[in-house]
Length: 106
Image (tube, rainbow, N blue to C red):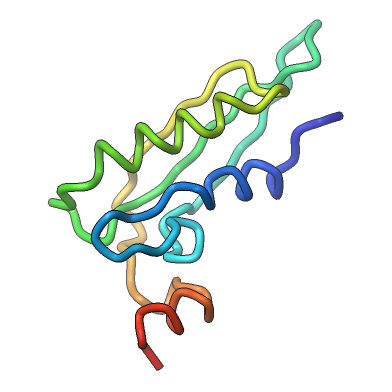
């Protein structure tokens, strides 16, 4: 079965921000998921662009590591690259309704 952006996003939902206790997808931290098939293989390379809630986020290395770990465990994945970007800057309006409910933001 071919890997999809939605299946990668579901794996990334397992990554929970240790300070906010909400997954990084619902927080709106994941900006880009690019899937590139590997020639002569049933696997794909996955490139992810994500941000942090602040440039000095102390959980950054943990979030990057867990993102790579969960996506790498997918059968269809060959390699995973996670790039941190700060443009556009993260704002709370990127969060899903579920995240807003969990954090009490209305």
